[in-house]
Amino acid sequence: MASSRWGDLRLRIISAAVMGPIGLACIWLGGAAFVLLIMLLAVGMSYEWLRMCQVEPGPRPVLTFAALPVAVVLAAIDDPLLGLGLIALVFGVASFRPAAGVHARLFPWGLPYIGIGAVALTWLRIAPVQGLSLVIVLLLVVWASDIGAYLVGRIVGGPRLAPRISPGKTWSGAIGGLLASMLVGLIAAVPLGAGQHAFAAALLAGVLGVIGQAGDLLESGLKRRVNVKDSSNLIPGHGGLLDRFDAVLTAAPTATILALVVGRGVIIWQ
Image (tube, rainbow, N blue to C red):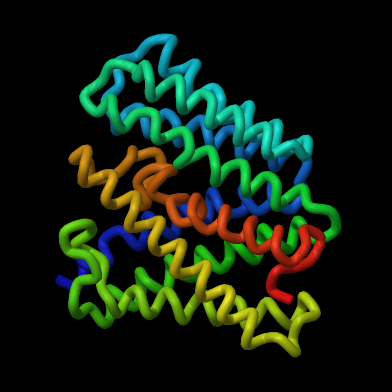
């Protein structure tokens, strides 16, 4: 029983050890390296979405989801509204004339699902002065929530959080993820010069952690609807890109809204 409970841990660690440094390097460098990373992730997630929807191959689905890397580029040149407008326009066209497939009605929804998060993350990173800190702390909060939920859920177990959506998730795991994300927010507040507001920073990180967990449940519900276990097998131990970045797709837009409220050049944890 114990071995099956932790059966995927080794693969998860190896995959994280390989992909983590590459991703962090692109985040640190910013500019073209980060934009290229987000574009590649958007393309990969688009492939997984089309695969999940069992869309018939052809020019229409390819051209439809080509809007996502273009929207990322528009966000990178500081015009995220135009990028979101492009996504909305293509979404409307795709909804009116969806591509042929088993889950054709679900097909267009991949555009806002993937696109809004990709545009938000890009726009956060190019923010003057504080873009690097915004993105790194956001990702640390999301990752901490994911790791905390994984470890506590398997160690403690207990009642299921949403058995009809994701039978493996537990309330103990959700609480563990919440506490882990709050701890990251608390720790991050000090080097970012917001030590006097550490409690508020922890609460903010907790909110983002919970929203990230909601994004995880959303993707689990989508997979259950199309009857697949993982969005793909691109990442050993983790499944696909959508499985790995589902929480980021919901947390990044939330962080962007907060950044707009407090001022784009201000660290939202302050």
